[in-house]
Image (tube, rainbow, N blue to C red):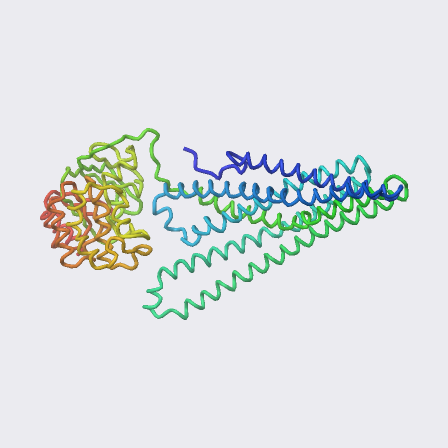
Length: 560
């Protein structure tokens, strides 16, 4: 399967917006040519014999008509240009978000959250600006300039050649100077990304900053980051100003070329005064677009830098892939089998069989891979080698949605989402069976929990459940997993944050729950509730026994 990529700019519905922009370009060209010919006719008539009253009325009406049509053309230009840019970033954001959802959580751990947010906001904005304000302007301005040159050449070849050469010279000079924008744009982008990551991390860890008394230290780091962003931004904008200045000089060069060549052509009798005045008027109309060439180059270099950053994110490895024709499982029994399983940085060549309905304690020292083993059962981590079977089916061949409906994971690494308590409870299963829901909420003590808040189940939870206690978060997480009625329940060190009542509720649930349960715990007094033990050693080897009494002495020997 090929990795995802950025879609082509001119594809899908954007072809229609491009066609509309071409029509706008033709309309703007027609207005410019009409104005040029009107000015030529007026001045030629004045030079020859003067204008009559009815001629003046006609000219005035024509100019008023052009003035009225002009805003409409500009409106259409802005509308379709923005449609083109917004359509692209809408598709790209959706594709990038879908790609991130297919990555394993560990593949994203090394990425700063601030940097990821910048991809969706800042970098997408840079792409939109290039398409809407840069590419669209080039299309329309290019068509207008080409049309004017063609009509001008029919009247005076030298005027057309002089204008064309000056325009090309201005564009090439601005392009050459604009190349210096790219490294400065890249540096500004890098500094801004670091600042965003710093703010995101520090705000998330603000309680740690207060508790450790490091507020002044973090303020100093913030000021250093801000100074770096300021220096990079000033350097970029200064160079952008130089690029715009060169582009404006190109526009003045075009104006001067028309004036000088036109004067020579009039003196030689090769062109009329009206033609020269008309050409100068048309260049005056094009001047704002020519001056804007500097900004177009600025948008282009911003696009190149941001597009590369987005491509790097698309190239990020660690996708959780689903086979082309996955096996569908509507109802599982809950038996699990590991076959030669090796996981990143932990389990090595592990094999074990866990019958359906069992109670399995997963034990071992910190860092031996207990949480990784549970995460692998729901394919949040992919094996380096070996396979995991659910009811005889390789979970790598199962439909991901079916697997995660049959296997529920409760871990503090799976945070609550911003929203109401009810939203979080029903996040995995939007319409749980009422009878089953009542049972689950009794096990988790949800009624007693929500009774603490005036809003009850509509109580708002902040990011990650930061406004709840650890025990409150665990109760909601457990209920969230159970409401899907999974046949395999995975509990990753949740008992350590629960009070006595909470632990009693968990114990009652373990006794009555009809499926298979695997739990990680460091509380040895709770191991007697397990009918099987999985012990992970420091070397990554797994020991499996059906009686807790056989594995506990081994665990104590290894740790001693």
